[in-house]
Length: 437
Ligand code: UGA
Figure (spheres, rainbow, N blue to C red):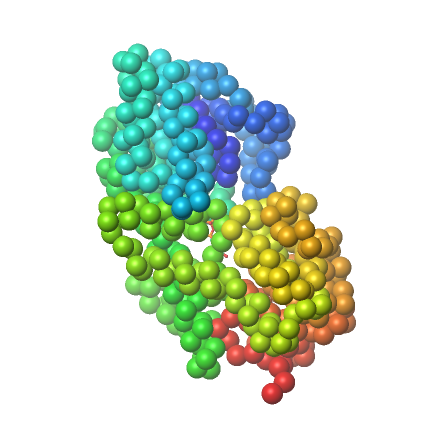
């Protein structure tokens, strides 16, 4: 099938590449000419494991191409996917201007029956608005239907998720359009769930909000574990064995970040507010997460008294491993706090050259290696659980550091391992080891 995808961010590009891999003829459209030229050469503008290889393969097979022109991309397309960003506005509401721009362009260009598939995360009711906008702009020139088809890909494992997802949600009021989208996705072999448009839009927000709730819940439990002498890793494992609870998204840590959970939880609070519903539970989830992101600095202050003139090795800048995305990463909050406290920061991330380090305070020193970041530091903060940190040689690290004091926001080491290496180890929801007194 001939498919056009508008937007080549994490969602659009991965969707486009994976649809070409299952045999469709895909044109990805983006306004950014530099980006498009790069993608034509088979170079992904984002770091996503496995994506470059699939891009190159499908470009060579002439199933995947890139353009800046909507007109060219939409020509003969049986389905047009909207995958542009919906960044949060100052008040937390989703900015829909890019989505609306695409809807206007679709209205201006479509000639034949087209299925418009919305991948972008949009508030309930947006697809009806898209439908109205296209209908008004196309003035009866062409028939079309709108389908809400939210994505559930995780950055860092997006390609794998596209082929092994748990479900594909298709929300439509047109059986014809729903059937076409099901056909498009058939080769993935993933269970399909059909529903109406509004419910599909809500499934996306409710899923992300629920996962964020699980994380904030276990983070609250971790605070209790620390106070009561329990171990949150064991608590989460024991809870997760109950199939009704499930073991995933129960990893206590420095809180959730990224381009999705922080944005979508705030947006859902707003969506609820619009219909005069106070979503108290979700407000607390957000509050707990804000508190969690500040936890490591609070622990370090309690340990050192003052952080003025202390040198901190800040390990990990991305919001999670295997991605170059720093949006809403705890590293930003932590480094700002550390600068306020007068600490010096030696930061390192394995994927640093690709990162948006301009989001960090200018006082941060970016290091090229882990060793450089550790050199003569008074303590270590672990923000991202990159394998390079989890497998770090603690004996070697101890030699490089001024004092081997670790504040680990991702519980990278077993307590016995930390104790065996003689480091002072403060983690999340577990007793501190190696600390005096
Ligand atoms: C999330 C969802 O998991 C995807 O299903 C969804 O498609 C995506 O948002 C989106 O809406 O586009 P993503 O933000 O890429 O995916 O990454 P996650 O793996 O969900 O992690 C989000 C944050 O939660 C990270 O900061 C991670 O470190 C944190 N997290 C995750 C925890 O602190 N504990 C956990 O147990 C799991």
